[in-house]
Length: 125
Image (cartoon, rainbow, N blue to C red; front, side, top):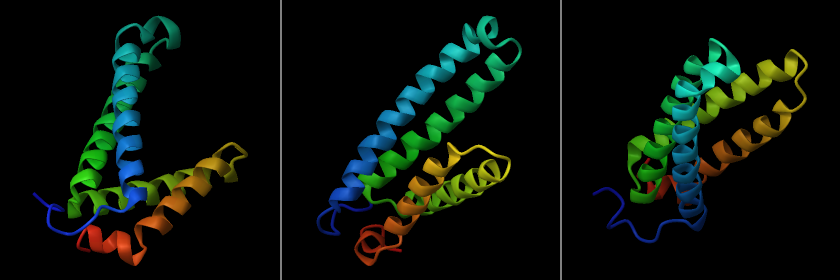
């Protein structure tokens, strides 16, 4: 498996792996709820929101697993997802959602962290 003979996993990557896994599982649970009972709460958007949450949760679980094992694909997937997060946060800020600034800052910091030499070497990128 990737990452087993590359030395110690960076502490930040261990923390991110756990957070991604937990967040992914919670997103999947929320998605299942929204897809089922959500139609009575959100009208026609419940099932659609549920499917989006389930897919997002599956991506998060995959990234978390890949971070834990040091899989190169997980680094690339996370970089792509964080860039999309930055783009969507910027678009939300432009249309007036100040709460998206927090997401923008978090995604930017995570992207910065993933590009540090020690982190990149863990993923062999």
